[in-house]
Length: 451
Image (cartoon, rainbow, N blue to C red):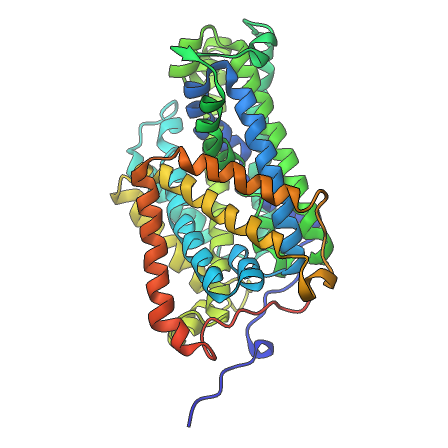
């Protein structure tokens, strides 16, 4: 006799305790705009010269289009599974599983990549080996993520305030020491060449990666009050605030750094040191460390919820599903899932040169975003057309333009990065064909909890 599969109503449920403000603070902390500004944007400055602002604006426009897809699909399917639940609902089980596999690759790799930047900015205060600093940040973030989500909203809100102050200092100093006029922004110059559309597109995936994270509000959908209203608001408030924190200081740097060579070869602490001296540069570096910690903490939160959802949707053998859906008796957090997704990151930060995978993560972000845009094209067909959800303006033009822009961006990526992403897709497909598909009635049964 077959054992009866638990119904969705019997599955563990997260508590709806977050208002819009708390959801935005957590989501903005995951975008961690100051961390993106200080760690990712220097790469944009090096490749785009004074055209960095135009490239950032282009990345913001594409990200806003992707945000429309997140907002519509996230209110249509408010699940902590995030992208995979949305794609599963609109495009089917196989597409949902592939999306899950790609998302998990991002969940595992991105936090330790960011954590490894800690030592670079601690150097102004203390000399710490990069692997040790990265591993400690990963461990602290993982342990804090076991706390209840409201406590983490408070912690990340405090951290976020510190990093915004650091970004504000950069903006004020940069504009106050402007070396060139705004004409440099609209008629940009690239070190050693000319700024072209091809140069802009080459930097597009990196700038999109800088804004990435606004989808965190979707992962929190099961803990947000009135998700069909607040998820969309959370997406756009988070993206808009992040844009200000990233674009304004980056533009200040473009205008305030002495030469394009300095812009290409320097870092923000170097810029601040030239503007205001060692003391202010050290304070900004400390703010960057806080930004990194904040980013890794919120990623640990969202990543755990994706694994929790995969267990609830029975993607694994039953003992694994039971473990991943176990909630902490005091804090109500998915503590086993938090440790499962966080502790490997500790080891990766300590032992591996995972920063080499930054290009692969950009490719995966593009592929997942394309899947979401395709799903958005299906969101107004059949029963989905009358379902309660926020609806994007200019549909279907927005998802079509997102697909076109990202397909072009993918064509500009390295063959090696594309092959690694393809290998992840192949591995996921094999698991689906060999394990999930033959057990369609009892495995990978994706559900959306009642509001």
